[in-house]
View (cartoon, rainbow, N blue to C red):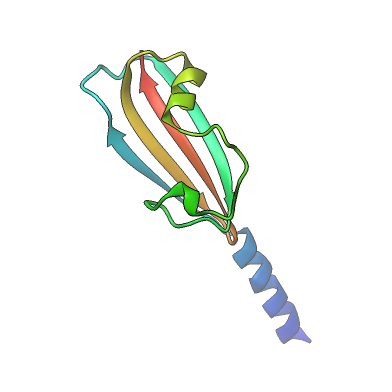
Length: 101
């Protein structure tokens, strides 16, 4: 009985565990500025970081990317683009973070 409880507890911990990675990109030579914009989506059965986002079975946000993040922050001149990926068991949250003026 204790073995079954341990297996169930270990399975729940594995399902709730996550790993987050931020990959920085330099977009232009513009100064970083004070504005920040975000665009995020959740991928169901998505691909690992660094591959095409279209490789997912389902995406919760059709308007997702650098342009949408810049619009969110009111940014006209993009300085940097960071992509933050948080992996869960069967889904993945991807966030594009844009800075600039």
